[in-house]
Image 1: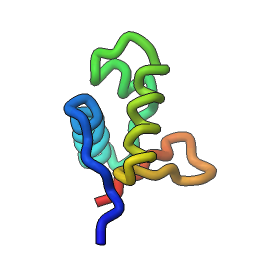
Image 2: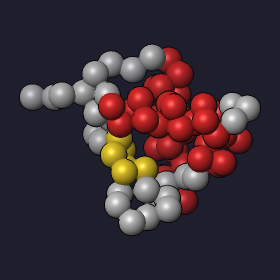
Image 3: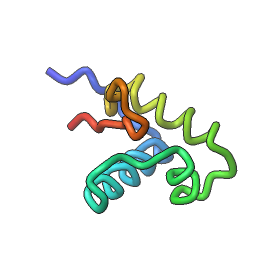
Length: 73
């Protein structure tokens, strides 16, 4: 049973950016890197989208790590 909620297009795009970055680099991106990749104007927009992914069950944080976004499949 999946507890994940659906994503808006912006949320889905952010999730794909995170997934691609992790596949390419082997670690999760920083908010500044996500801001650049998503062409958002501030890290607060990135923060909002990442926390929406977490709230909807598509991501978690890894405690004690600066690059701590972990995607849930």
